[in-house]
Length: 486
Image (tube, rainbow, N blue to C red):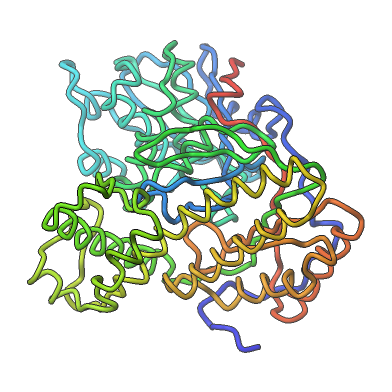
């Protein structure tokens, strides 16, 4: 197998003894609480919150088009400690872990963030106060505070706040690290400022940080899991715009396990942004068709998830351009109505395939829920086989419809699929933004399933020279587990 040269450094295969992660039973058991708390030296109470990352199950790429998104909050998490102060300064420090060197905090005057009259500064002005290339965790902490103020979730804090942050998500691209830091910040701040934070408003504020402070055009589902996710079950988030609508139990003996393939393409975010642009270009074409032809029978409010697969195929598919140059699209239709999308005049966009991924992916998410509920009611494996086929279809669509595949993720998936249901491995798919990162595996937690799982990992390691990292375990979201005062 020939691997691309823009991937991570090759290392020796991981031994089986390193392939398990103990679940985090509750927020108070996080090993990071002590390390972040020690950076706050004042006399007042420290309010600490733990927010989990997420393991994408189905639909996450389609969350900005209103899809049903399914995921599980992980035990890998972010931890934020906040303490009130009296000198009118906000201080944020990224814990150095086991380093002997004391990390240097980033400090900003409160009146630069929020005026006495309550006017909140915008992201551009706030980022200018942080200096050159601050760690993304620091940006997330400050951004969550400011967006919490702007949304009316938090009261102003004229005396200032001291904050410290650390995370176990740093090496797990695609596991929602930034959303988890934002969620932990809002939850800890609610404790320090003695307020109750609305979960939906908080999720939208976290997404604002990723979108406008970090320049990542992501949806809201990751933050919803970090804030409100329930441990050990599949969480449903309907992203139109945000509704944490319920949970789906895992059938007895079935496990969903993530495996980071050890590599991610360097152009992952560039490709992700191009998919979003092409999707909104397709959405704009569909919007014009619906309005021009007065298709009142089509439920349409701008979310692609409203369109059924049948309606898409019959009414819209053949009228979307398969490929169009950005310059031609702008000349004919103008900018698509999405503040986070920029159409590059020099890029050719595959509008049809990118658009239809979102419509089909929402349908797959709904079907996956039906399959898991059916599997939970019956001992027949047919429902698990069907659910696994939906996962494989989603993976194919990532790569073929969206161009977000990778050699490494395909190789890892094929290692599992080659063993298949006869060895209690039922399905696998790439997750999050694709282009490598975490592959989700659905398996039975039997001796046969565990043996096949490790066999697939060893085969992948031997073939690629990469070290896969197993991601398992689950804890509740920050607003569910609560804030700790220490």
